[in-house]
Length: 385
Image (cartoon, rainbow, N blue to C red; front, side, top):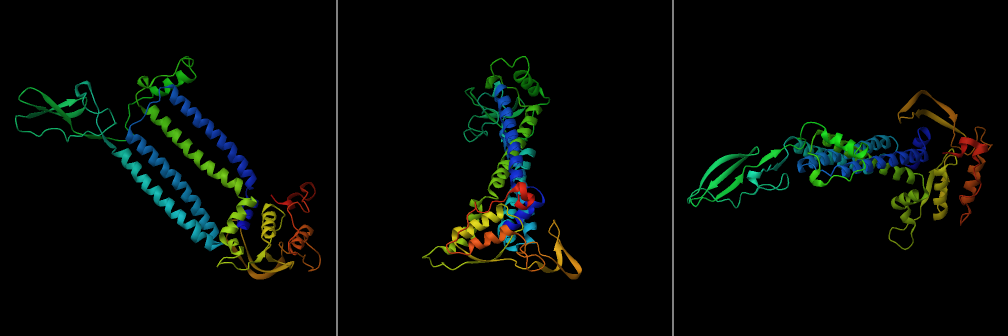
């Protein structure tokens, strides 16, 4: 598993490069997020309708889980060609769960955007009704017709209201609830112009608008909220990438994975305690994977067999960088780059490798990561990534 990740890193980008680049991207995204929050505060912190929030949050959460599902699906396809156990029991369950979550959230967001929540618009004539988009009208306390009550329908700012008239002249109003789609808003982009005036324009030195002075929710605010949600989701994804890239080639992460999968059997006094023997391992460069692997074998004092000793191998084909196996027309003898010996079966291929392995043979081991440092100025890419 770690060798595959190392080969991927060597063929494309090192984890250090990924971590550095993604950190710069993360800083830029955080700055943009804060800039949008500053603009929102300057124009009075206008809030969208509940159905709008539901549609946007569900839609962008669906996008987030879809990206995670795509990454897990790629991992499943990639590891299926090298380590089917990891593919089926690690990547596939997360791929299915994230895909289901993305689908459910997408349907919820589509419903909120298309149909919306049940809300009531108010006017001066219907002052007793709830505030716009705050509550759903409750008609439970409205009396039924009869017993001296008559009713008639009126229009209250576009909302159908039913007025109940009693014999004593007192009236009781109720309203028929209607649905407001999540993406419905006032036409125009006056809010963007107002944001420009209060952030970089002539009104930038004035105090921010109060919430009562905030602009009406229009197409400009809807566009700004879409952009902010995209930046926010991108920030979360980048945080995940930065975290994994900075842990991927660390000894702590390798120790955690190995101890979780099989290293626990080395602990004494348990029913599952058992001797562990590392059947085969190898590497062509003295990079982080090699140093972390030897450090783990040294810390746990694990016996091993290095693979391979021979300098030639009988090959029937090879794997391409995409993981596809290409079969030769006829098998052939080829140079074994992982071998301890060269093709003459006598000369040592990599002195550093033999010295590292010999240091592991004593019990307790003598190997430490500081032994036999790899001078990159002398050996170049042979030191690994």
